[in-house]
Image 1: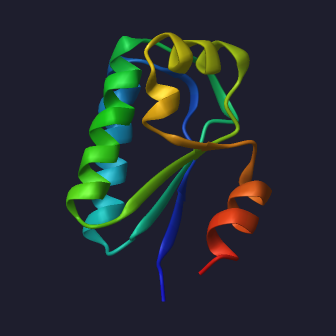
Image 2: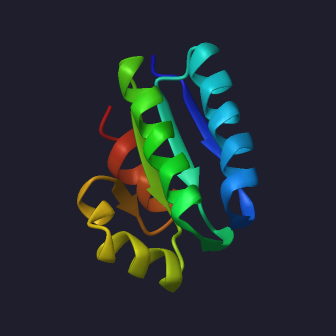
Length: 107
């Protein structure tokens, strides 16, 4: 049985929040989660530090043998992902429902 954990950062994902976010993901992975969904619905803006935190989180999850997914990105975040080609790195879903249907239902 897969252990799925949801992380919902809010506001701006910048250097300070990025560090908190990284710690939260590390703790989740240490607790045994093998699927992590980052729901960005409440994130208004991501800067380069925040993007680095997302990449770092993905590496943490993958190194533990898990999978990381992202959902509910706004236009600014979507544009940032496209400009940095991160839209090819992360698997992104429209929302938690789509994630549940495509990832969880497929198990």
